[in-house]
Length: 284
Image 1 (cartoon, rainbow, N blue to C red):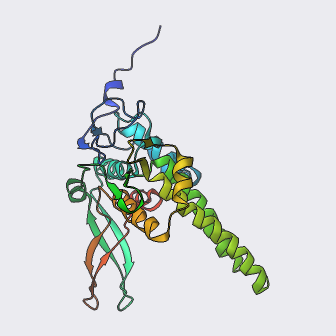
Image 2: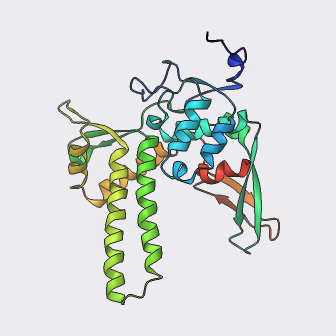
């Protein structure tokens, strides 16, 4: 005879609630959320979650993050298909739910080289998160009035691109240690650079949700979009990448104004992505 565990109803307690950055402006397909609402309750990390974040392979391929989000946020059914800004928001929410409301950023002053740390208030960061109000778009009047609609990368796309980029960067660093002629090194560096350039291009393609033509056609096929984008001049590609940067940086602020305690120099820290390999390890 099976007995019901009287403790089962106490295993998951949602201690805070937040809306997703995507805000249903770019709706998720069926199977990503358990409920249609973008309001998510968040639970604290479990001992199992701590082990996941200590697994280097799971961190690198993104599985640790996906698993922990699905375990701590009951409304998330498939975290791999979440947009990256939503993932960042939920990771910060999970940290707060686990009673970790601050984290330190270690930096060196660009003026005097003094090494120091700055404390960031995660509750204030979560409260000030910018939600999407409308889907970013770009009208290209100079090439037939094409209208491009943008979306953030999914966590699966982000993890795939990051893994590939990491491998190529590791190859480039290892070349410095090899005893090769300058010509041989240049040949290898050129091959690595070509792969990284293609990765950057693929990341831009992945940021385009769909393209509307002046005739009313809606193009969503990745291959068609990639083929078209590959034929565009540099100034068009630059406009598209600028718009992609906007959607990728929506939500949690990636900047912080700081000042050096040694020389008084003030500057802005940028590109403060919430990399789980450092962001969560600090809490262990």
